[in-house]
Amino acid sequence: MALSIVWTKRKEKDKNMSKVIRYDHHGINVAVQEHLRGKHTEHCLCYLCGKFKPGTSENCKWANLNYARCMATPIVVSPVFECAEFVNIV
Ligand code: SF4
Image (tube, rainbow, N blue to C red; front, side, top):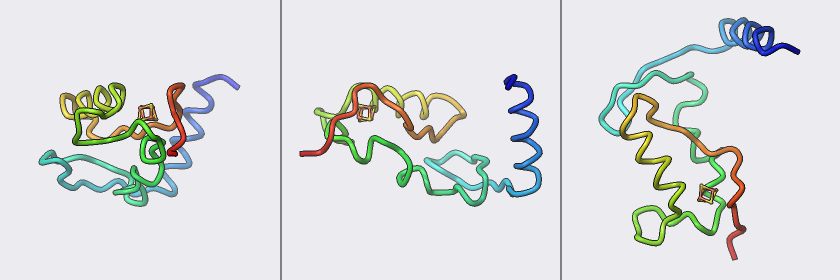
């Protein structure tokens, strides 16, 4: 299926199902689909990964990079759904 068809169907679905709201996140006023607000920690693979040690010098370099990018751009939250360097928590 062509990407444009997928995109059009997604937009139609979202228009019918999703309400977009705004709130302040990390001090920035952001837009989010209401049903997804605050859900990134439930879906982000990093929270299940042994390399994820936020706030420490041992934190994953890719998680740090993702966070830095989020803070430097208007895309404030970007959960990781797929990652080649994931390791199980031991
Ligand atoms: S290795 Fe991947 S899943 Fe694990 S913390 Fe880093 S970015 Fe997240």
